[in-house]
Amino acid sequence: MASPLALPAPVSLLSSNPTPRSPDLTRRHPLVRTRRNAVLPLRASTSLPPFKLFEPPPVVASPFLPDLEPADPDFYKIGYARSFRAYGIDFMEGPNGFGVYASRDVEPLRRARMIMEIPLELMLTISQKLPWMFYPDIIPIGHPIFDIINSTDPEKDWDLRLACLLLFAFDVQGNFWQLYGDFLPSADECTSLLLAEKGDLLELQDPDLVSKMKHQHQRAIEFWEKNWHHAAPLKIMRLSQDPERFLWALSIAQSRSISMQIRIGALVQNANMIVPYADMLNHSFQPNCFLHWRFKDRMLEVMINAGQRIKKGDEMTLNYMHGEKNNMFMERYGFSSPTNPCDVINFSGNAKIHRDSFLSVFNISGLPEEFYHNSLLSRGEDSNFVDGAVIAAARALPSWSDRDMPPVPSVERRAARELQEECRQMLASLPTTSHEDQQILDSNPEVRRTREAAIKYRLHRKLLIGKVIQALEMYQERILF
Image 1 (spheres, helix red, strand yellow):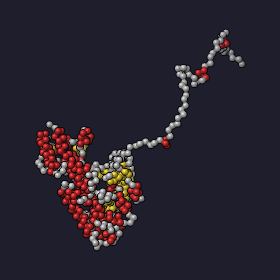
Image 2: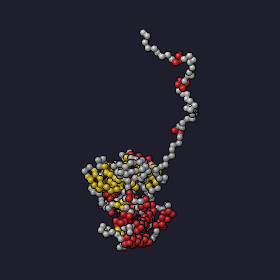
Image 3: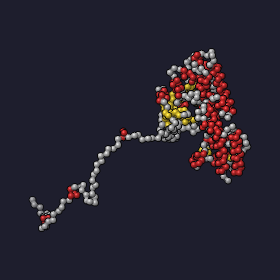
């Protein structure tokens, strides 16, 4: 059926001369553009991307000091075969012996993080009270060394007992300590003053310490002569054929042992222990690690302090003795430090400074036994100047304190000058100066380790006194008018 509506005709049909229309090439070919938007010609690259396998590896700077070398792989194997474990650390060996360093970054955490666990079976352990040994199967009943150890005083002769146990462990066939002993320092590498000659002791310039070391040396020789005489059994004689061997074992026992309270089952005792691998951690007065006894499976853990940030290459350290002076460190371990915050200078004059004013000048906070430098309140130069020696000065300097009476600046300056003069008199009374001591060390690089430790001890003493003089000078400049 047709539609009633008429459709409009195309324009071309209505016009008499229709104009031809050019085709729209842009609509048919979308890649074609006008000159303004012309498409640039395509260019193919024939070069291949670099092959990663043949590229040289990027050079990464080592975080460790250049004079440090990784420990022998056998050092790890002998422990890992006996349930020793280490996490995120490397044992490195340098000119001064072994050290423990972080192999990765450690972010601060609320809880302490473990980096080592050492089983009790690897330790040489003697308690201070009966039962004196937790693993008596190390020493078979009836062995003469058992009677020698029982004849000593558990409280006073703990080092002699550990030395005997160490010598016996070296003699037991297949014992762990036969292998671990290869990594302990030899007699020439030890800095213990027990191995020092008389001339080395005179280099200390400390008559009291010299007297103590001579007494300890004589005590060790008498103990060896008493038990290692000509009529002693062969089982005893082969442990230490000469007194030098026993002196070396005694120096190892003193310098590498720890004393801590441990729990075995329901028994809690104070024990002296030589702990392998943990004895490789060096000392610091601001340590980043501590020791923890895990009684459920009889493990000693080395833990990173809670909230401690560790960077890769940082050394892991312990504080060997809390609150002890340099002479105690020298007597037992054979080293000292110029920044020991617990070292003491004995003043004989009557001059005193105001304690609170001295502490506020250097931003030292805390109680006298726990002084610390508050770096958040210090300026840049103070952070570089204030160290353990300034903390020691805050403890050692004669002082007075009265909250109701402020200090008088002129009186404070006079007292500080008198204390400075007394310090200079101490330095003048010594046979050598700190500059001469440093020259001796620099000019004799091959000096014996014990002699080097003795010279460093007297040098550190002079550096401490010099630091106190500088601190008193700064105190005079900064005290309020």
